[in-house]
Length: 522
Ligand SMILES: Nc1ccn([C@H]2C[C@H](O)[C@@H](COP(=O)(O)OP(=O)(O)OP(=O)(O)O)O2)c(=O)n1
Ligand SMILES: [Mn+2]
Image 1 (cartoon, helix red, strand yellow):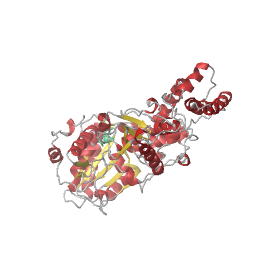
Image 2 (image 1 turned 45 degrees about the vertical axis):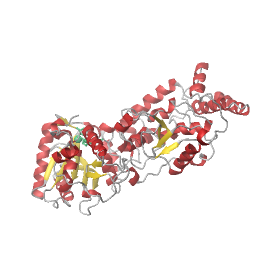
Image 3 (image 1 turned 135 degrees about the horizontal axis):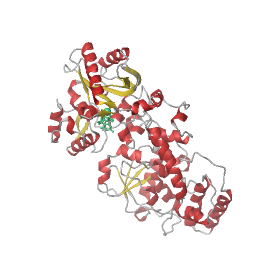
Image 4 (image 1 turned 180 degrees about the vertical axis):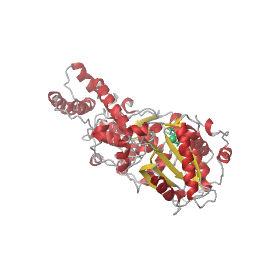
C-alpha cells in the first residue's frame, strides 16, 4: 500500500498529531488488553478522541476482525454507521510508518454476509521492527477472552447457549448455518487475532530469496537516505514475497508487490482455497470461524483430514461424524410426528408439560433444518429438573442419540433458570441423525423464550432493536430495563424481567404489530 505523501519521521503529538480529527470507537473483543491500552494511548497522544460507545460523533471504528465487530455491534447499527470501519492493523501500520497509511486495505466489510478474514492474510505482517513499545506484545497470539466478556445479550441464542454451557463443553462453537459469518460462533476461547498473525500454511521453499535479499538491502538504503516511505514499502514487500508459493517472474509483479504490498495473482489463489476450506469446516456443528481458520492453518483441507485431528471437542467430533446427516433437512410431516412423540413423553413424565416445536417448523416451513423444542410448565415449578429425566427417557427410546451440550440451571435458579440440551436425534426406526435442541423455560419468561426460538432471526433482531430504542434489553430470557449505559451489554445481574405472559403481550408492549408464527418469515 502506498502511504500518503506527507512524510513524517517522528509523528507529531497532541491536537496536531497524525490522528487529529479522528473520533474512534475501539472494539475490544479479541484484543489483548495491554495492546488495547497502548493503542488508546497512542491515539490520544496523537490527537484522536476515544469514545466509549458507538455514538454519532465516532468517525472511525476499529476491530480485529469482522467477527469481533459483529460480535460487539449489531449489524443494523453498523449498516447505519457512516464512518470508517477499519482493522487495527491500519493503526499499527500508520504508527510504524509515522503517518496515516491508506485505509483502502484495512476496510472491514460491514455487510454481515462479507467474510473478511481471508483478505487479511494477505496483509504483510506488522512492522514490528519499526514499532517501539508494542513490540513485546505483538507475539502474543493467544487471546484471553473471559466468558463474561464474550457473553452475548442473548440476541443470538446460540451464542448464549454456548456461554451457559462452558463448563460442560468449553470448546464448543455452536453453529448455525444462517449466521456463519456473524459473531456468536467465535465466542469460545480461540485465537481471536489469528487473522492478523496468520501465515500461509504452504510454507514453500524460499523461491524468491534473491528478491527478498535485494529488498532487504533497499530497506536499509532508503532508511539511511531518510526515505522512510520507500523503506517501509520494501520492508512490507519482503513479507509478501517470502511466502509466495511460486517464483516471481516479471518486473510487473515485483512492482505490484512493492506498491500495493500484495499480489493479485496470489490473492485469488489464497482466497479461493481459504474461503472454500474454512466455509466447509465452519459447516461442521461446533466449529466456528476461529476454529475453522486454525484447522486450515494446521494444514487441513478436507473433512477427512479433520478426522485425524485430536484437538476437536467431543461435540465437534460428533458434528463431523454426522456431517451429511445433519445437513439433511427434516420433512415437515416427520417433524410433526416427532413433536407429537415428544409431547406425549413429556406428559408421561409430568402431566401438563408444554412442549412446542419452534423454529422453522412453527413458522410453517415445509422442511426444517433441525428441531427447536421449547418447553415449560404452567405451574411455574414443575419444569425444574424435568430435562434430565426427559433426556434420559428419550435416550432409552433411542429418539435421542448423541449429546452435544447439556446445561442445567432450573434447580439452582442460575442463568434465568433455563435448562438447555443440544444433541442428535433419530426418527423412530431410522439411523439418520438430526439436530435437536431443547430449551426449558420457567413459566414467567416462557414467552420470551418462545419468541426467540421461533424466530426468524430477522424478527428477533428487529424486536431487540425496538426494545433497545425504548430503553430495554430483550433476549430469550426476558425484557429488562436497560440499567446502565445504552450499549449492547447485559443489564445488571439479578434484574428481573418485565412480567409479560404471552408472545402477544410482548409484541404489544413493544408496539410491534402482532405476527402469527407463520407470518414471521421476514
Ligand atoms: N443467529 C440466530 C440463530 C437463530 N436464531 C433464532 C431464530 C431462529 O428461528 C431460531 C432457531 O434457529 P435455527 O438455526 O434452528 O433456525 P430455523 O429454525 O429458523 O431454521 P432451520 O430450518 O434451518 O432450523 O433461533 C436467532 O435469532 N439468531
Ligand atoms: Mn431450527
